[in-house]
Length: 130
Image (cartoon, rainbow, N blue to C red; front, side, top):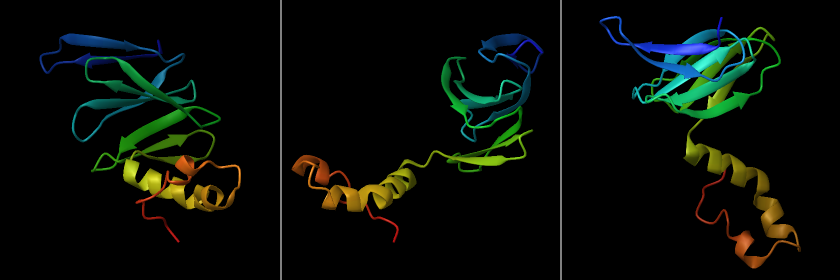
């Protein structure tokens, strides 16, 4: 209940304590490549850590305790569950995110007279979803 994640080796030796959550940690998952750790907490956040224990990112989006986290087998998506009765999918696939963004802003970039010529080219070469 101290808001920490502890990493141990197989012999039971504590290797690292990850400090950052403001409440109890409820779930921990390793990414498929073993390089990233996700932790869920009663503080309503998901935190990402590298294997050396450095906090990389905090995801905020749930309105209540985050109860569980898991990575997809390819590591490009993570799922979190919460006491707010939601399940969230977090997309880490950069190519897919660029496609989604350019699908949303493509018309704006091409048709808004206030967009400069350089910015109009932001989505050139990115296949958008129609």
